[in-house]
Length: 512
Ligand code: KIV
Ligand code: ZN
Image 1: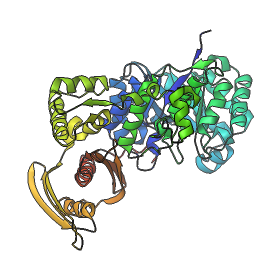
Image 2 (image 1 turned 180 degrees about the vertical axis):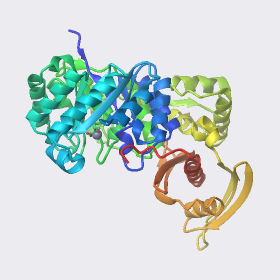
Image 3 (image 1 turned 135 degrees about the horizontal axis):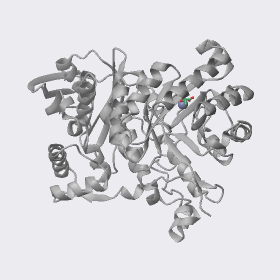
Image 4 (image 1 turned 60 degrees about the horizontal axis):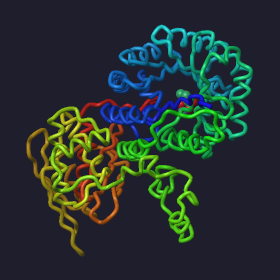
């Protein structure tokens, strides 16, 4: 029997971006959107166009670039928001407007200061207006979890009549439990007039660690769209994690009458890309995409897996994309092998010039590191390759001195707007000295919010990937840098963050 289709609505670029400090530039959003399309996500929620010009431009660029997924823009119910979302998704081959308003007593009274009647009116008006831009309109009742059931039915009834095609039921505050959430979905589908004309959707937050369980329960009760994010990124404790939802539905196909169209082999590359761009690293024991998700430590387990894999494994690592974690290129690989591997990894570079820069980086790395893995290649494709026009600062050369009993010293040559400048500083360690030396030139006055280092692959010759999060005047940016020398990686990451601060890109954080 063929299964019903379960729509995967990815909101990494909107709700995911609401994770503190995870705001992304237009180019970064585009890179993630392309990976989501490659993964065959049905709907990509690309942003909140009314939140800022930057987010509007990002949604519009994604709407232009993406062909195989529906591109969605979020809007409150105000006329201005809906029109802005409508304009942003206009270039899309398939576009959706997602409009929302809160329906719980606490939100209506304390936040919106609106009566229930006013909320219903606003919802109807927003959906009707959205339908003038697209026939694909989603309506969400924010804080549905704490909304009165009969009022929810009234709102949903009204917006379906007004033309909504997807009805989303959010657990905005992550308050529900699986049985209760499934039951609420079942009752809504039974009670709302016109329920059979729309797709029912679930959107769960993870405050009690139940976002995936609640989403799956809603699917078992009839929901046919799950809203989720890569690595479970999102506001506060995050959203339901896409990879867990997809693999649960697939692995327990005996229990679900629906399945997704996701190409699961793209899950691990997507997870790595999102973690690289946002600086949100994945915990090693995270399901599906954690580094240890498929490693067996105890002797009994290892013995079992060697004899028959399914003794301890319910999924195959290669089915979710871990197989790409293999040795791919080396010192002798030429430009065309490099280009082929980029294509196989789904990395599209904007020009031949960008390919030449990336290949140059690859050759430098191959001189330092014997074996180059796919992860190394992903880390090579930084902003200086895909958006060189934003590269105001560049590291030209560096010297670090660190000796017992001596203050560590960094001596750098930077290119600032094409002019070489020398900088020097001591510090409490080589990284501290490096950042101080850079600030001696840049004088950015920004505040360092996060500094994190991760080994990209295993072994002591692995590249270190550094994330630096800077804040200035309410704008927050993440810079990345990778190198086999982690102090050099740190300098690159700091400069990358400075380049974002001075590129004039607006902070994209929605709902700010
Ligand atoms: O959590 C929530 O309620 C939301 C809505 C905008 C769908 O993110
Ligand atoms: Zn949300």
